[in-house]
Image (cartoon, rainbow, N blue to C red; front, side):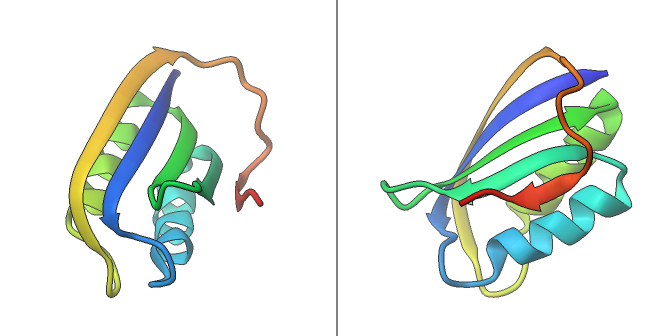
Length: 90
C-alpha cells in the first residue's frame, strides 16, 4: 500500500473534476479524499496499490469532464490506512 499526495493544476474547479475523479478512485479501490484549494488547484490524498494510484494519476492527466489539467505534482509515501472510502473534503 502506498500513499500519494497529488496536486492538480489547471482549470480543475467548477468543472466536475472532483466528481469524476471520485468515481475513478472508487473503481480502482483507492481511499482518500479530494478538495479544492484556495489557489485554484485540487488536492488529492489517496492510498492504495501503487499501480492503481499510477492509473488514477494517468486518468487525471487526461482532463476528465470539462477540466483542463496543465500539470500534476505527485509525492509518494507510506500509507497509514486512515481512510474508509473516497470522498470530497470541504
